[in-house]
Each structure stands twice: as C-alpha cells, then as structure tokens.
Length: 569
Image (tube, rainbow, N blue to C red; front, side, top):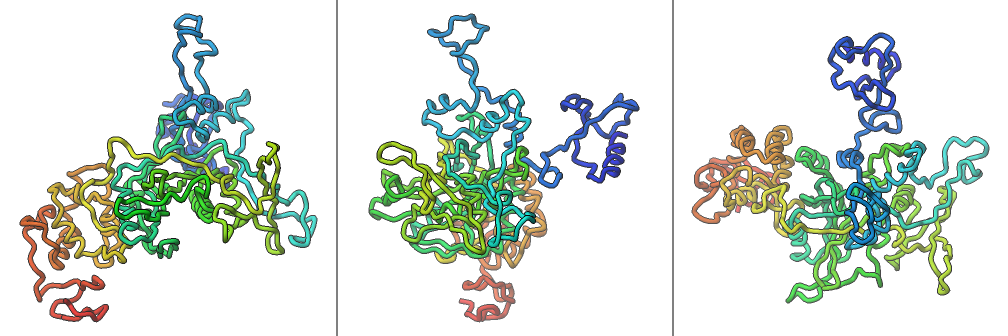
C-alpha cells in the first residue's frame, strides 16, 4: 500500500506521515489520487521517484498551515481582465489580439482607476500576481513582516541599552500608502442587522461596540477581490457612555466562537458607533468625521491594529506563515446628509507592526494624530518617518512625532444588497445579549415570551436566530453546549427535517417545560404555537419558578428568591 510506504518515510525522517500529496513528477503533475491502493495498481515500480508536498502551506516551523478557502479559490483563478474588440482601433480579425484588446493583468492601475467608483487599492491576490508574474514566476518572492524589535542572539556587544549594532538594529520605517488591501468590500446581508445594533444608541444615547460574524466570499466587481459578508453582530460586555467605550472580560467569548464555527461563520471584524444627535424630531445626526477632522482617530487605529494582529492572514509566501489581516473595522457615524452611514476601514501592515511592537501612541489633545515613541532604556524604537509636500510642492520627510493617521488607514466600501439575504430568519427577534441596561434580558421568561409571540409554525424559522442559539448554549439553568450540534447543523444547512429531529430530543422538552413554568407574555389566542405545545398555563405553587429580578430558578413552595432574597412578585 502506498500509504504504508509514506508512513515508513515519515518514520525514517521524523515528520508526520499524514497531510501530504504525492506526485510522480517534480513540477507537481500526475498526482496520485488514491493512497490506499497497492503500488502495483498505481504502476509504481522499484526505483521510481515520488515527490511529497504538504497538502497545506508550510508554516514557520515546517508544519502544514490552513489557508483560508477564499484564498485557495482565488489562487486558482486566472484573474485576467478580458476586453472586447475595439471597432475603431483594432485592425485584425476576430481571432487576433492587439494592444487595444489584449487581456489586462488584474493589477493594471490604469484599469482600476477608470472603474466606477475608482479603485485606489488593488486586491491582495492581484498584488501577489504582480510579484509572481515575472520571468522567475516569483521564485524568490518573500512577504516579510516588519519588525520594530531588536534581533535577539547578537553576542558581539552587551544588550540594549548598553549596546546595539547594525546586525540587530531594526531598520527605520518610512510610512507609505499601501498599494493593496486584503478586503475590498464589506456587505451587511440586510438592514435588520445594522438597525438592531443601532437601537442601543437610539434608546440610550450611549455608543456601542460589537463583533461582526460572517464569511469571506469573492467580490466580482474588482479582479481577484475579497468581500466580507456580515451575517450577525455579537455585542460583548462593555461600559458605554456618550463619548467612550470600554470592553470588559467576556466569559462567553469561547462559546460564541464555537457556535459561529459550527454555523459556518467566523469573526470578520468589529463595529462601533460614533453618533451625536442633531435633531431628534427628524432623526438627523451630526457630520463629525470628514476631511477637516479625521476618519479614524489614532486610538481607534491602534485598536484596529491590535485586532488585526490577533487575526493574522495565513499566507504561503511569508516566512512567518502569515502576512497582514482580513479583519475589518466599521464605524457607524454621521454622513454628509446628516444620516447614519457605515464606513469601512483597515489599517496598513506598517501600522500593525507599530502596534504589535508597542511603538505607536495616541495624542491626548489631537485625536487625528498619533505619536511614534522615543527609545528608552527599556525599549529601542526605530525612527519612523512620513513624507509630505511643502508649500512649494517639494517632498519633505518628517519625523513621525506627531504622525497624521491618514498614512495608516485603508478605506473599504461598505454596502447593503438590493435583495436582502438572510443567514438567519428575518422575523423572530430574540433579545440581544448584554443589554440589561435597557431591560432586555436573556432568560427563560424572555424565551417564553419570544416563543409565544412567534408567528411562524416552522420550527427551523423560530430557532434560526444567532442570539437565541447563543442563549441556549450559555444559559446557566439548562446549557446545551454538548447537545446542540444537530440543531446548529440544521440552521447552517436550512434543513427543517434535521431541526424537527432535534426538537424531539429530551433537551428541547426540558426547555419547553421551563418556559411553561415561568410563563410568557401573550400576543393573542395562540400561545406557544411555534413550540408545538398547547396553551400556556400559569405557574403553580407546585412548580419551579423564575425570579423576575435575577432569573434564578427557585424550588416550589418558596416566596423569596434563594439567590437575591427578593420577593416572588
């Protein structure tokens, strides 16, 4: 068996025997499709050369690395921009080509600048094609991550601050406008996602932050481009005021990531509001972020860089195994028409490096300016420069103390589709997490109310709500983390039969019993119709009851809550 041969090779050389693709030729042609057949059936004889290549891309330590599916797909696309024959300029036959109709490369800047709207940044895969399009086919291309730290292991002198040399000293950084971007378009599946997020600001006047969950797909308006599609927004615990946001530790973070992964989603970015009401009667907001002030503050750029460093982009051309990031930043702010606009951004790879190595600081009295740290006895910071034009049009190099943050920002178009898309059901609206300040709590009383008000009789539509699924997994009374996998598969594949199978489980029967115990708000004669049960019955003295103040489930026959000691009400 070929598989046994590969295992013996792995044992001999000390590397894992799985995760390899076998080819008969060095140039990766004639792939051996089945490794479970014998060598004779595969027509492999003694003395034949076999070539083993990792199935994924090699990581920094030699292990295989999982490249994003969208990157694997775009890497296989031709990417050429085909043009029709020009009736005025082309003088050849229908089968010929000339300079006026020959296909263009995906990185052609003149073509991108004439699109509507013009594209300032080529896609990252077009940039890779530009690097690998020469005669050597990118044989020596390496996308190196910038480092602002002193290289370790230099033994010719004492460590910093007593000594430093040109071998270990990081190079100075001159900030340039990044020619490419990892994400070329942001699309919310529907307006409901954004409206529900904005409801917090509308009701409290305080700002709000959330994580965007969705997927990466091909953006066909730009060659070899990637779109971030947003399907849900998760709002973590936070302390919010009219002028500030502070994130606090989130005990549900791991559960959210697990649920999203099982639903085929991932964390693609973050969103925050910066809204100031102008006229409450007509619903207008102030236009505060513009070319005369700033688009992103230095503090927001640092936060975006921190998030992008946490979500690096796997890349096979980088010696580190990663390069840049697909993590996006979306700001809900006032536009020129004094309506709420959604603006998308990323920060450059240079900004990511400055943030990762703790070299960039915000300015206290000027949000549009950053400040490159100065070297100290604890840390060496390389010089950071940027170029600007003086009043005579000459290029002048300035030290980045302070630094205009426009040199760090990449803008991304944010859109909503003409025809709304729905990963989750469009009508049910289970309360959003961590909104206790609004009186919107996630407990079994709100679940009972939600089920009683649900008009759909299709069980899958009722449970296709990201916030509801999160509550079912993370609630303290009846957590379903180990038994909800089948339901998540049903929501992911929109399989009603699979959802009905899970509905018959013991776990859902217990959930129904708990909802019947606490009771829900009636919306008409049909209560719990979507649950498949009969009319709701009031909680009796012989059943467990939920505290209206802390939602603790108390034993029957008690009038005071065992958790908060408040009356049953």
